Length: 219
Length: 219
Image (tube, rainbow over all chains, first blue to last red; front, side, top):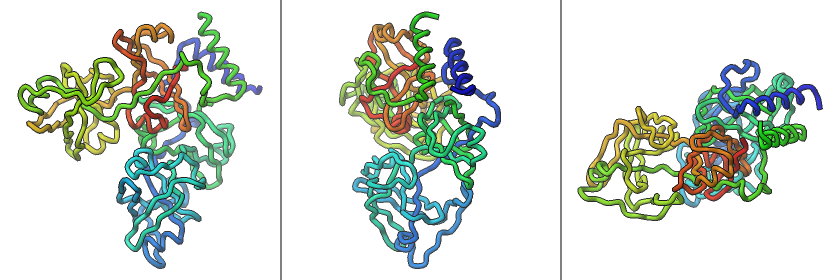
């Protein structure tokens, strides 16, 4: 057991003796704060599916940059169709990826009538199938529909500061009137990442989080 | 500090030394489990507003009993109207109450274009105003629209077993693939209550909870 572990244990014991529960802690040091980014439903397209949905030689048109470097929201939107319902105007995020990936919420799954699993981005094996419809055509994917697992993007320098590494799981406390601890949140470390915790709309609403609010790794 | 507190602290310290974070614990003793009830948006009506919306001498018709004794879902439904949108087919819960209370989610607030505060049931001062429309008329309430704060209903015997009392705040851990700790959850103790934690759809989706799933008070 190293010094940091021991410190954490002592801190926890003191907190319990004082009866402190998970609470708003607005006085946390700046370097402990992690900004929140809320992901609404969206689609990443493969180059192949982009052409089917938007026409031969179609290219994604940037609508605005996203916080993660190189990622952008597109002008292009599609309609998602499942056995029980339709969701229109779902935004494409660029650039294109190897595989088409549709990220939706639990509520969206009810509306579409599909059962998407909670998955990390890119982990699409045996995820939900559904149909995407664009102005030039439609694609029915056998898999690619997921509920994105919450995660924290970090630059290696952030990871060093927080004492974590790529693939670690951490518990994250949220400030605000609906205080919540998200358990076992995946840490993703990459030179190209900017520090940010990504949650979906359900998670943001449950914790009363808004874009740019701050959360904190507690263990 | 009593023996139970000391035991809890020791348990926490050991958990930390072993690197245990908040996790699924399917082997918890039966008497620690609290079943979950998920509240979709709904309306409690005053006798006065019931008559305006459904006609003179209107009475609520039971659709089905709810888990809390004496409470029932009604056949009757209303339309909610805000400055930005409409939500149809919102169910009335009976019996009537002193004041009309509309319980909606964060997402519903966006849709209606109103800002409802997170409140305990009955705490309606300066909460959100909106319009309710029924088959016989409409009512515009100045206050009564809230996002219901999560809470645990308990019989006094449960409260004794858990070592809590009416009005206490506890941290509650949820099982499942989206493990979450809900912080500072209100405990409500009454002879007429049946043990159940109430959360709204956003909270249920964020924690992957279904009706009848179990949660646990952790401190």
